[in-house]
Length: 186
Image 1 (cartoon, rainbow, N blue to C red):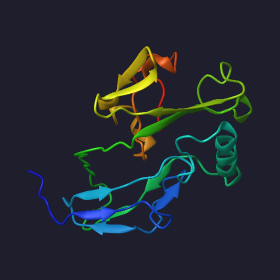
Image 2 (image 1 turned 30 degrees about the vertical axis):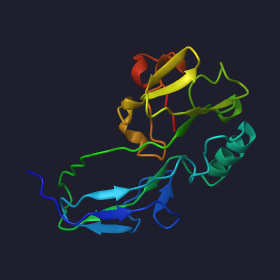
Image 3 (image 1 turned 135 degrees about the horizontal axis):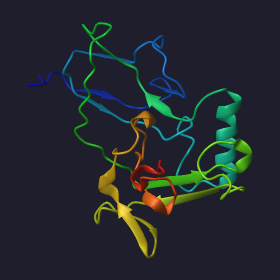
Image 4 (image 1 turned 45 degrees about the vertical axis):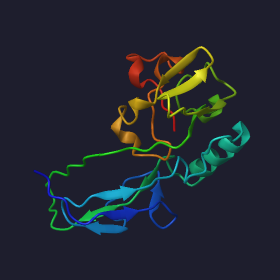
């Protein structure tokens, strides 16, 4: 049985996040005991510069800034240090609840970036803001298409946790197989 200790809060801010890499030399921003619950917030991609309603030009500028800094795009909250943890110990993380924001962004960078999925289908790039209907548990893609919000966090584990979280977007944005995790919504 997992013990429950002091509840910690870690809110995303310029002092509590880093972008584009994992590095054990980064000093922890929070220290906890094994079993302590942590409530945390996170930012969307590119130091939180990715946001709902932005234009393609704003997206391209934000991504280019990350590339110029030789950084990846994923913004990570932490690190969190667990007292008494030893090298070789197994870290078990139990996500008890994910609370999505009211919207998400799906995009393809222009082909010149040589990044992402389907560059040949979106040579000029595209960005789409999708507003989540949390009451109905759907993400309306178009009038005739929607997908479940309840698929939160069920795709690739290397994305980290992002504000808006990563939602299942199915085959509407990708021809990859299996379609369940073919594309992400940040």
